[in-house]
Length: 190
Image (cartoon, rainbow, N blue to C red; front, side, top):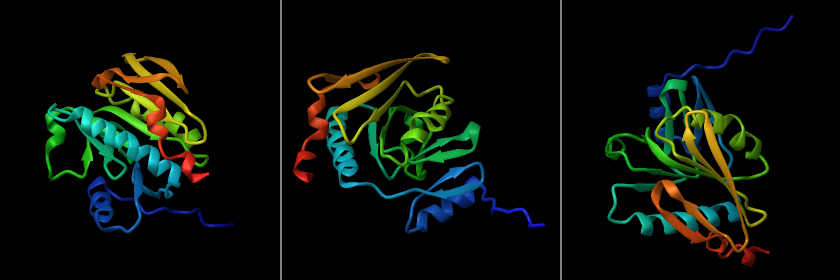
């Protein structure tokens, strides 16, 4: 007979304190801390390109774009995730004493082989629990392809696919750009 595996349980407050000083990032899943993997160069370039576009687009508005290092908290589910990019427009997220956002309007994930199934499955299902979220976007790294999901009601999300030559539009924040701009400098990696 083997003893059952036990995992340490952390409160959200303990998690936030540990994460503040940890050399590696962890997501928080109902008391468990799960280390997240590093990113490829393509992943970092795509996230940087989009972040630069969104920072410029949002300048002078109530919205702020947060790239990679900002956690999104889903209080009702007792979860913290690190989206690749989030845009929050709610004044309650402007507090500088919090290491997370609670009211993102837009969340973007850049897909990788190791995270794709989770990003489009359980993670998306969890994000849907946040009534403030209006759009969820998945960006592929290995091809010019962006999948967007717009909330129409609590249970209805409308998908849209953008490919090479298309203009991507994030309706939630009034943003539009040629899709190729997201992939700028990726060809140089090959």
